[in-house]
Image 1 (cartoon, rainbow, N blue to C red):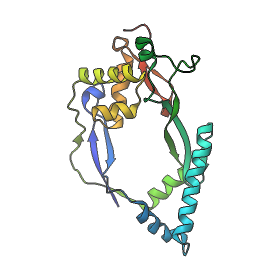
Image 2 (image 1 turned 180 degrees about the horizontal axis):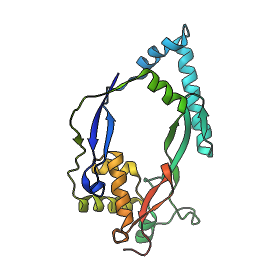
Image 3 (image 1 turned 90 degrees about the vertical axis):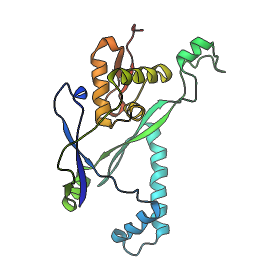
Image 4 (image 1 turned 135 degrees about the vertical axis):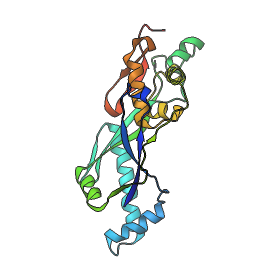
Length: 218
């Protein structure tokens, strides 16, 4: 049995509508050694060395194929794909223009693009398996509100600041900077991009979506 807490998004995130969602009550991280020990329940007499070899081979195979643009499907587990971003250790286009920075290769007009994360979409069978063996128990009777101590103006300034520094902002980065959950941060950015006066728009879709400065808006 797993526990969850009901949370409610602030009204300013939802246009005044009441939005409630469940959030799992997190337990301590399962370390690699303990994870291997638990796998013996399903693998039988196979020793740890064999299991570690298979897991290492899986990681290396993902590292080999994902950067090429392939998605990897593992039956019963899910689909893995790579997400890209700019290398923040390199100067941005704005910094290049302002400081007259020159690359060794003058044809390079953008920062180095690198792998920023791995997306995972679970196999439906995995979700069925989880739901077949787990029940979720609510540990809070009253709805717990997801509070944000920053004002809307402060959050907008943070979003603009991240875009100014990096050329774009991701949902993960914005959520971390504002201390919000991903759901609240997503609602925030969506409202910002709806109003052109904020000078923010979107680029890309789904897990590859980022927020950038609206053209011709200073």
